[in-house]
Length: 267
Ligand code: HPA
Image (cartoon, rainbow, N blue to C red; front, side, top):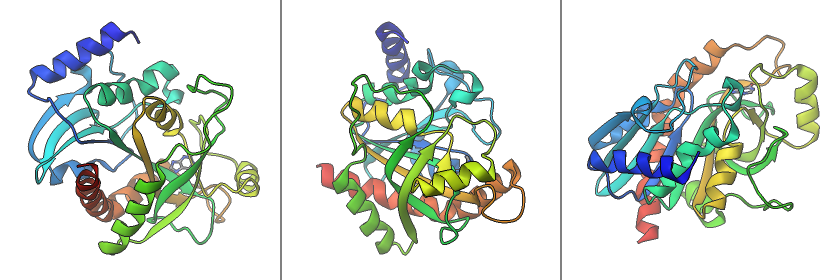
């Protein structure tokens, strides 16, 4: 994904009147309703943005939405692509590069994830404090990867903000695998042993790319199901979508408040 393509994407978006962004968000499976809180929105389907990969997964509507929360200028990628869809890592992280090139200094990456702990129930939100990159790939160029991808100050703000709006929030480590199938119960026992709290198939490469670009990064998971083998029943994509729908009001409340708190802090 060349600089030229990136510039074409940025120019195309600017032509739609989008010039400045205080904060960017990437919304995962079933979590797209946050954009309803925005005013004066401009929507650009991903298919119209040069280089943007298009998701094939149900629940990812696939558009870039710009709008305002109060006077905070917000850019949202509603939908994302996954490595398992056959896209290269370059393609997976390209939308984050575009958000960065549009001037967003802060980014909140969200996803749907499976819970690896009995005490983290479907419907809980989890602030990601650490990543376990188990994808076998890395976009990070150096031999030594940074331990702390997520911004400590912003993480504190998320915890305070969640408390302030009475949205329960867990914290924990997110293990990222390639998918596309859910894990086996034995794999989940392994991940539990390795102190992962949630498991998913996105966010890893986007977080690392955003960090590398110098953005302040946050990750929040919506725990949509117990991971395989935690309960004595099989899991399915329908459950993941249904839980997303059930908790998305809470999620949108938290994100709206957070966007405003972060922008105040950044001033
Ligand atoms: N495993 C992996 N990815 C997921 C899960 C899961 O249980 N739930 C939502 N995304």
